[in-house]
Each structure stands twice: as structure tokens, then as C-alpha cells.
Image (tube, rainbow, N blue to C red; front, side, top):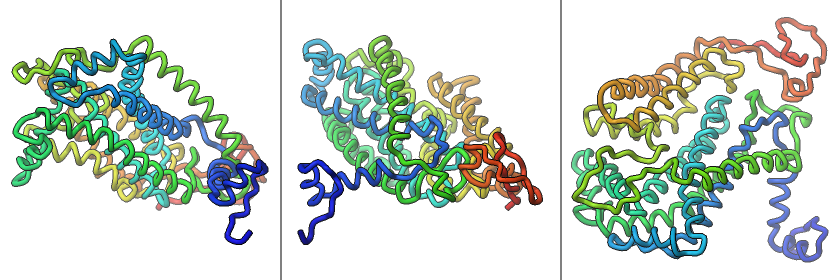
Length: 430
């Protein structure tokens, strides 16, 4: 019939649908026969885990919103009602609250994997930038969600963080007033945050769609960091990586369940079980753990505006990372100096996370400053210089040779033998 897509689906009902709306053909093309490098390790599971986590967060969030009251005098009590009176409300809240932590764990590992294997390099720059936008949306959504229980830490966290915008000259006070919906954190603030917390996850879904679309245009990176050159370098996504992802999802859900059922409040703060009181300031105001490195960067500078600029700059520098790293080699597996510096960066981030949860005094301030200094030096100074002077190790000729151990002969000048018998070509210094 003219104008219809020629579907290859055998089921008559699905064929009828697919011929008019070829969604099943698209799924088969993008998630069935889609060619993927054959050497993925389990670090490539974390993208799928992030998508599963996003679905869990949206589903539980919708049901929680049905029972939540976004009003300053009733919000805390409505959360307690969800925990005590709503059927399985305790489970919904614990899954949602701990799901935020699990989401950030998965995304941070996903980003560290990309940093280690150079997944931000050409031609995947836009893919990486979309990932940074996803991180920003996650942070905004999580912050607004943390305010909704309207406990002590929620209230004072909102007060401290929104006040940061007052550091900006001229427009700062106006931004704070707009965020608050008045002249203090109150009912209007709670309503704004509830509306945005409900909206932003759907915006996040749209950016994730663009992120995946960009991935399917450029193709995936791989642990070797080399391009696909022959059909032997790839495998169809299904059944190989759908099964591998399924194993990862089962392990992830097991860890998630252990956290929810055995330690549901481990990653939270006890002060948030106290109703918000504008007249009583907590002894030590701390954000959720996934914000602590950025909080430490903020507090490492005595000047308020300088701290705010550094905090936002710590994320902004990630967006321009593809142009800061000048090395022609992607994977740290072949960059011995970068590999060491990568782990120094990870250590600096861990130090920032620990220091961010401590009082801003004594040794913690100096540790924050040292770690902050290294964080920015790593991206702005070390990477641009290192790419010009580092001598990478020889790269394999192809993914299939490295994986299958096909030597293909040992003739020629300068070729190095990779583990398993694969022949590697020497990498000239850029």
C-alpha cells in the first residue's frame, strides 16, 4: 500500500502498527542490530543503570506527589503521613530518597569512566556536553527535592544555597527574591521548588533522549579508545549487551534493595526529621553527600562571590574539557602519566567530599583549598600541557586483534606486541 513503511515484523498486529508508525523497526535498529565495540567492560553498564534509575525516580515521584502537600504549614506532616498512613508510602519515600543517592553514584561513576577512557574527545564533544547538562539538571532537581520534606536541614539548606546568588553584583538580590517568591524562604519558595522538582525530571528525559541520539550518531567509545575499523570489531547490541546490562541491573537492584531495607537513613541527615524552624539554626548545615565536593569548593575561598564563581566553574570547566585535553590518545590505558594524574584527581574529589561534610575550620579548610587548587590545575593547566609532552604507549591495530589475540604477523618496523599476541602500532607524539 502506498505511503506505508515496509515492516519486517512477523506478528500481524505489530506489523500493522509498525507499517504506520515504525517504532518497532527503530527499536530493532537502535537497540537490536546496532553495532557496538566488542570489548566493552562492565563500566559501560552505568549508562543503562542511570536510565533505569531515572525511570524509578519518576515513577515513585509521581505517586509521592499524589500524597504530598506543598504548603509550609503542612509539608512536614504530609511527609509523615506518607511514611505512616499511606499504603507502602514508607517504601515509596525510601526508594525515592535513596534513589537520588544511587542516581548520583551511577552518574559519577559513568563520568569517571568517560574521563578515564577519553569518551569526551572528538567526535563525541556534544555527547559529553549533553552529559554535563544532565548533571546540572540532576543537581537542580535533587536540591529542590531535598527542600520538600521541610525539615530543619531542608529549610536551612534552601536558605544558605539560594542566598549564594546574592553575591552577584546588581542582579543578585533580585534573583534571590525571585527564587524565594518574597523576602524569606517560606510558602511561596516551597511551591516554586515543588513545581520545578516535578517538572525538571521530564526535561531531563528530553536531554537524555538527545544524549542517547548523539551516542547513536557517533557510536560508543571503548576501553582501548580506538575507532571501529572492521565489522569484526563490533557485536550487535542484542543479545550480547542486553544480557550484560541485565546482569549489571540485577546487581544494582540488589545493592539498592539492601540500602532501602537495611539502611534507609544512612545517607540522610537526622536533623531533617525535625520540623523546619526559622528561629533555630542547626549547629552544622550540610547538604546531601553528592553536593559536598562542590560545597567544599564554595567554602575554600574567603570571598563569597569568588566561592560561588569557583563552585559553578567546577562544572563549567567540564563542559570545555574536550578542548582542554590536547592528547591525540583517548584511553588512559595508553597514557601512563595521565593515568596517575587521573587517580590524583579522584583523590582530590574524595578529599573535597570529606572536607565538605566537616566544619569550615582548621585543617579541613586547607585540605579544601589544596584539593580545589589541584582540581582546576588538572583541567586548566596540566591537561593542555600534558597532551603535548606525554609519550603514549603503542595502540593496537584494531579492537578485534586486541580482543581475540590475533597476531597477524610480527614483521615491520616498530610494532609492539600487545597482551594476548595482538600487534600494536607505535603512537607518534603529537
